[in-house]
Length: 113
Image 1: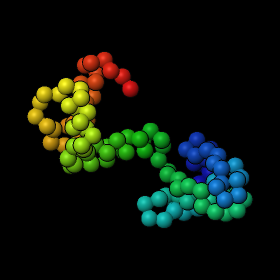
Image 2 (image 1 turned 120 degrees about the vertical axis):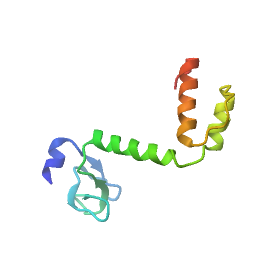
Image 3 (image 1 turned 60 degrees about the vertical axis):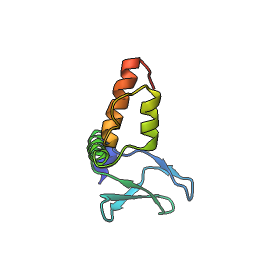
């Protein structure tokens, strides 16, 4: 488990209970969590720790987010924003389609975030 901290997957954290700032002490996790991070001073829970690299976690998060957006209706806010951007096409069927259309309209107009 020390490989996680030496590889940079986790860094020091502040304990909300005692205020100590240190690397969490790792123990086996529960359910979908690989490791449980506890405060070295007071032993209270401070964070869940993954064994995946940050880039891999981001890639997985984006994959699952995209899949979820493809199954949901667009939000009222997305539809209002499309209207404000001057979109004249038929309403999008999914959040993913609305998001892609918003990105295209914002890029086409040169509006940046």
